[in-house]
Structures are given as structure tokens and as C-alpha cells.
Length: 492
RNA sequence: GGGCCGUUAGCUCAGUUUGGUAGAGCAGCGGACUUUUAAUCCGUUGGUCGGGAGUUCGAUUCUCCCACGGCCCA
Image (cartoon, rainbow, N blue to C red; front, top):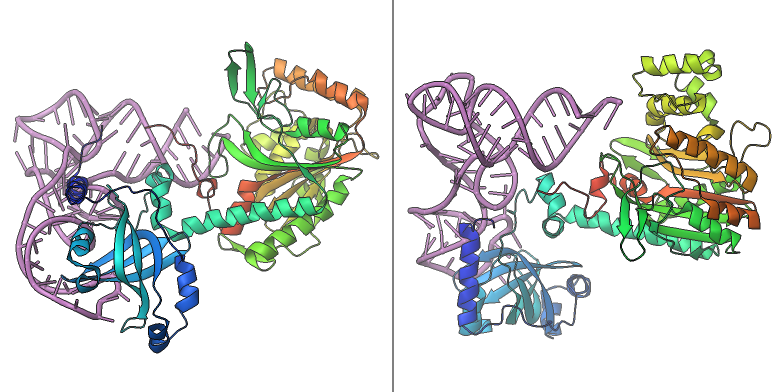
């Protein structure tokens, strides 16, 4: 139990006084007939005379966020989901009893105001109260008005306070919602079906990542929180749902960083008869539409960098990117030993199990990824690191796969799906061997998925897009925690 | 996991270098004030200085351990 501070105690006293006056601290509901932004929209343009002629009374409600007392009158600002407006409370307008009630209200309380609009001397649209009601009593003080709440730990742990006092925070989450809505509309318009597949999976699959494990008592079995929905969505393509998408959470039991939260939101979609090349084009269209609707253009500022999304976006092979942008020598590309030596020089952590392809992608992540500011497709990923992707027809050592990088970060991963069940079995077997050798991120054998492929999956291209990272880009947020309402924190 | 930094009043921060148990602004409380908007003016309360141990006559300050957070690295 935390100790009661003086300020909180004072609020409890006021609550008691209000109660003694017969005021309900938590009445049910509150009648309103206008939101604050509607009021501003309807009356904000009128001059004093026009407002006087209007003379109709309106009821609105919100949280008191500023309070200036004058003995027998008060100015307050109240805030609802749509905006902020000033209200003028006069003792001679609201009756002695109501004014006494009002005197016991604090910043943070919810209040209902009934009154008419006018303009103050300084020209601010203000509702003068004819009647007022306490709508909810707040028992804790809000952070102060100058600096607000800046302590990041409190902002994440008590997001409700952050949202009350930091306007930009709310804007970020409004933008987040709009981005997701735009994406959803985009796919629905293209005849994709939105689906929900298991979050609890007996065999976690679809990504090389360490899963969370849990246990189902009634079934008496282990279950894993999904690291990706991929294998279930592709089963749906087998079933004839040729265009599907899912926007939902994935869970990965890994470290927390500026770009990793253990649960994060992923869009995955699958499109029968398409190839990864079709998806590159589709990405350009999708982002163009999202940017248009959310930012009103195709250029954004991210952490001081200007990023231009105007298509077409460069398509560069992993090998070329390593050579041209990473300054990697030919020998590293052709020889595993040289690659390993070079990686060590760069202080990259290698595992004994890493093959040449794995080492090259690690070098890429280290040297090239941070440089890819404008949207760029990297293609030609080694088959070794792409256990679910279709092999390239010309070169079976690479796959028909791309990753999309924007702002120096991986944003999406896409490929033409491997629909050959025999090849897929071989890839699973290699993953199982890696797992047995100690790789906790390697895929599990999934016999049911193989059976589904044996029934036949049409040629399909699929992709996953990290929604949180997209939101970070479009809201200029430096940390993933700024775009997740309740980021994971260690319990105190 | 490693390195660096941080944790002081409800909030935002000083103070700690050179040890003598703390200050400001806002908020709160009391008073004045019926067009203010960072309202103003007068007065005033409020702190186990993140937790624990050590050194010391004495620790918010120095040392060590722990917790939580931030940034960087892995």
C-alpha cells in the first residue's frame, strides 16, 4: 500500500464534503447534446452579437484540465475526446449551492456544463454555465501544467495519465488506428478476406524465433503463443481462401529494445497466383495509399531524416547490397571461412551452426540495414535462411524473397511461398537438425502443414509487415514503446 | 548478459563535487479578487532524498549490493 500524500488526502476530504452536501460523486451517465469540437465548429466563427442572438443552451461534458478562480467566478478548461473549451462559472448564474459544489471540484474531475456560448474580452469562445454537475470525482492530482508528465517510466506504466496530459500521445494512437484502418480497407477492396487464426499453437511456426510456452490443463498439452500466423494462413489458401489477411499480435520470447516488444502487431497476407514480384508493386501501392491518407503526401520526416516514398523503390540483391553498400569483398561472398572471419572482425556474434548464407545476412544486418533509409527491396535471400520460401528457378541456393527496409529498419518480409511438399519436408528436416543442435529459434517439423501442402497449395505469394514499425515511421516515434499503448515492463 | 547514466515533495527540477538529515516552480491549503487563460497578490502545509548494508561522531551526499528505468553494445 502506497503512503497517502497530502494532496491525495485533500482530495479525499473534498470528496467527503461533496458527499455530505448530497452530491453523487459517481452518477450514472451524463446527458450531452454537443461535443466540444462540434461546439467550436458551430460557434467558433461567430462574433459576440451573433452568439448573443443564438442564445440557445447546450449541454457538454469533459474533464477539468485547467482552473482559474476569482472568488465569485471561475474560468475552467474542460477536455473531451474531441477537444478543449473554456467555461465561465459565475456564482450569480449557477446558484449559491451549485457554486459551493463547484468550489469543491478539482483539476481532473469530470464536469457537465449546461449553458450558452459567448466570447470573452480576449475573444475566446466560452460556455457560460447556467448549470453544472459533478460527473466523476478524481481522487488523484494530474501532473503539473507546464511540463506535464515526462518521466518515461510513468508514462508507459500509467499510460492513462500520459494520455490525459500529453496531447501528442493521443495523436500517435489516433494515427496508429488510421493506418490500420487504411490497410484493412486496402486489402478488403482487393477482395482479401480478413481472418483470425490461432494465437495458441501446438507447434509454433512461420518464423525463426523463440516462442513463449504455456500449458493447457484440460487438454493436458503444451501450447505456444504464436510467433507468426503464416502456416495457418497458408492452410487457408490450400482450403481455397485464395486471398487472406490477418492483423494481429505475434509473441516472441526475446529481448526488449527500442524496436522490439515481446508482443507486437503484424499484418500477414497471402495472395494465390501472385509472385513476390507482384507483391513489390503491391507494397508501393499500399504505402502510397497509407501515406496519402495519414500524412497527406509521399515524403515523411523520421528522426531528422527525410524519407521519400515515391515509387518505384530500388530492388537490390543481398549480394550487391553487401558489395556496394557494405564494402564487402568478393571472397566473403564466395567463401564461408572468409565470411566468418570478416564477421568476427565486425564483432558480429556468430553461432557454430551458422552456414554461409546465415553469416552473410548477419553481415548485411550489421553493415547495410542501417543505411537503407528510403524504401528499398532487398532480394535474393539464401535458401538456408528462408525455410518457407520458394527456390529461385535460376539459382536454387537463393529464394524468390524480398525484405523491405525503410528508415534503416526491416519493415516487411515477403516471398513466393514454397508449395512443393517434398522440398518443404527437406527444409523442415534441416530446421529440426538445427534445433537439435541447440538453435532455439529453428522451426519445428509440422506434419499437418506438410499434409496440407500435399493436398496442393496454388502458387502463392505472402508477406508480413511489422505494423508497429510502420507506425513508428509515420509518427516520427523513436521507440516501439511510443506506439504501443501498454508496452511490456518489468513488474515493480 | 555487458557498459554508461538516472531514481530527491503529487508533477518538473536544483542541491551531493568539498558528509552536518533538503530547496524552487507548479499543484495543494488559508485569504483577496465576477472577462481570466502559465491569471495576479498575500500567507502556508508537504520529503524514510528508490531499497538494504558498510565507512563515519554523523550519510540524500562516499563505498558495496539490490530494484526499477533510459541509452548504447551483444
